[in-house]
Each structure stands twice: as structure tokens, then as C-alpha cells.
Length: 214
Ligand code: A2P
View 1 (cartoon, protein in one colour):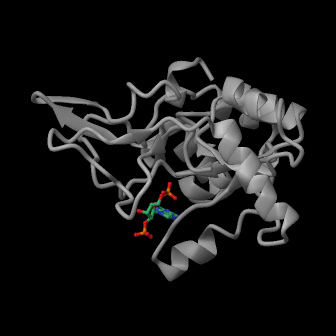
View 2 (cartoon, protein in one colour):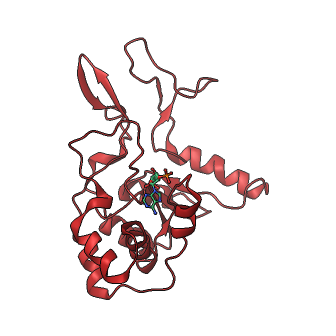
């Protein structure tokens, strides 16, 4: 389930009002989960999981689930380390997948004032120490904290480089140091302009996940 909040049902995947505000649906995500469980029972899918749910919403799903979510997929990188959310999921046997693990430098709405993850001095220093790239340091960090990372690249050499993270190890201190670079900084928040102001697109939906601490 991509988000805990839903858009209005129909052929248009991004239904909007003329003012640019999304048209929502208010189906309880627990009902959606029960419907997805039926797909597992029928053998139509092997595994089902969640994305962009916060810890409270995960527990809410677990309270009704007969099929446990296999995975939680969330934005996760050193500037949004998700330390508490990962501990929450691992305690409950959910694997965490990090999307935008490199801070999505190709995102369309990039603003010049935003911090650039791959330029982070603490990461660059470790890259020099291990003769690896900053991307490889970040991916290795996720491997060591048992988080699955899905970096995106259209560059063959980088795709290969992003796999070459199993021939070195960070020390425990380095793993926690990278975790302490956390700024709770989200690169991936869908935004819209309302009355000339840039606002989070879905923040008014009751199930918007990012108002809870984690
Ligand atoms: P490109 O696709 O041009 O190779 P994320 O996975 O966080 O969304 O980040 C994807 C972005 O990071 C893409 O712009 C991709 O560029 C770039 N990228 C992927 N791997 C590396 C790497 N090893 N070093 C630097 N940039 C990378």
C-alpha cells in the first residue's frame, strides 16, 4: 500500500480539483489491508507490504493483520536516518526498505537551499578512508543496519558500483556516527502551490503519515 491516505477511485490516478487540491478517498487502510490479504490467500501475490506508514499506523494494521506486512518502504538516508522507525519495525519482524537512499539528487523539485547528501563531509571522509564513493558508504551503512536499499541509477558504472558494497565494513562507531548525521530531512514530500504558497500536498488528509514523530 503506497500511502496510508487514498485518492478518489477512478481511471485518473491523480484526481485533482481545479484549485490543484487532490480528490481523496477515506477508506480505512485496515480495510484495504484485509482486501490485499485476500490476494495472498488466492495466490495472486506472494507478499504484501506497506510504504510511507508511520509507527502508529503500522501497529494499527498489525492489530487486524493475519498476513503480516513483509516490508515497510520509506525514504531513508543519513539525513532521514529513521532510527526509531527502523527499531520499531525490526522489533515486529518487518523488513525496512530505504527508498531515495542517496537523497534522490535527480528529483524534479530540487531547491538550491536543500542539503546535498552526497556532499556531506562526514560521508566524504569515510569514502576517502575506504577508497569508496560516498554512495557506497551510505549503501554499506544501510546493509550493516539490516536495511534494504534500492538506489536508482541509469548509469551502468554506477549500477555496478552500487552493488560493490560487500568487500569492506564500517566500524560500529562509524555506523552510529552516520546515524547521528540525521536531520529528519525529507527530500520526498509531494508539494503543491495553494494561494501562492508551497504546501505539503496531502497534509490535510486525516491519515497523512508525517505529522507523528516517527
Ligand atoms: P544517475 O541515474 O544519473 O546515475 P536515489 O536512489 O536516492 O533516488 O538517487 C538516484 C540518483 O542518484 C540519480 O540521480 C543517480 O544518477 C544518482 N546516483 C546513483 N548512484 C550513484 C552513485 N554511485 N554516485 C553518485 N550518484 C549516484
